[in-house]
Image (cartoon, rainbow, N blue to C red; front, side):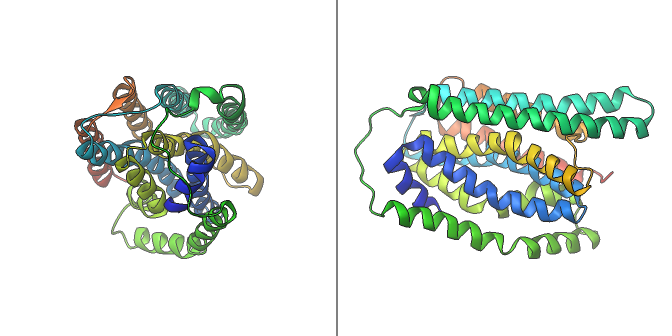
Length: 311
């Protein structure tokens, strides 16, 4: 998956390469989540979505900065692209904060549940519209802002058709295991070994996005930071603005109460994570210490959710 992505990036630029990698990587996540929503595992799905955002934002970006920083004392990347990703992630935080605040402000939880469900349906439509507008901004009206600086010229070794077929095949092969993975998660959580929240938030995102994670890290070690940022931050943003609202709408269509109402602790964790990542990318440069800070933040969050009681 990573090799095919790099080949496509050499032909069409790192913006398209990062977008394709994030899309195909998240396609697997979406397939797994749809199966889980259909089975009524709403909490696992919500936790896995939040976990995917956090793992890309903190774990993957942290490893990119850390391992890339060990090879190069300082690396630079497209600040405009990174800030746009971070701003859209902040918007996604708002879409989760509002339902949580809405729930807290109402004493009648039955009415609150119905209202939050309707609010989530409408908000999901707006989030999808914003994502489509972002794609138009990124690929058409402001494509020049995402152009990488001139680097050493590399030439692709695979044909375009072979690279695209490889992307599709890897995605399909992984998706075949979606049902088995969901069944395994259900068995683990029912056995009482781990909570739904911890499995969905920590284990599922790491397994489901492993190929995508490797792509970002290996490209960062080659000093292709725009592609690495496009995969890491781009994937987080895509999950927040495309996958999550799409699952809300799919749940709406099949009669499952999938909402944008996440628990207060989860929403706060996401907000703080976006804030920290935003601070670290605001200068358009990275080093290994910043990577260590992101990884440390992720480890603290993982430990917190391990001990977090299931509601």
